[in-house]
Length: 158
Image (cartoon, rainbow, N blue to C red; front, side):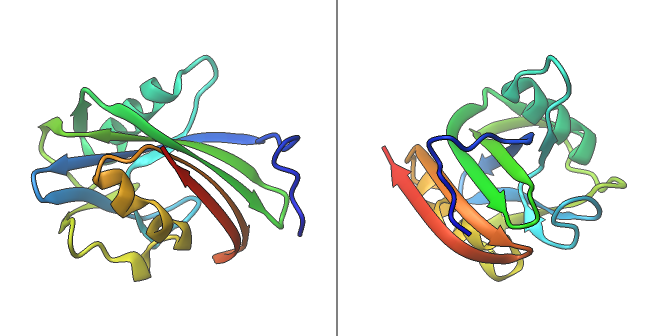
């Protein structure tokens, strides 16, 4: 599958929120939806009229009962799936939060050492940018997937 990223348009817009507390990061095991069973950051699809930041904060509250404090936009991910889904994801990082991470119908919270991130249970693209983001690098990535299998990748850090 060849993607012309210059003319590519998403048909889904979504967000991811990563909360770091010193040397650990708050991840979730998704219970439903895209990526059910995988480990990721909380997040989800934008509602009409909602900004990416508003969505990331709302989704984190809904999935974990936690409010991210002063999140910073760190990057964007563009995904072309061979089944026709084209997803644009805005990624945020917060160093603080309020509340207690709590399991919901959507997610099971899990604190993980930043040195022991379980990439083998995550989407394949996460290994291409997550460590660099946690080290302070902003980024932009494009990825082609066939189901769970990553076919192509390109990531730029700045």
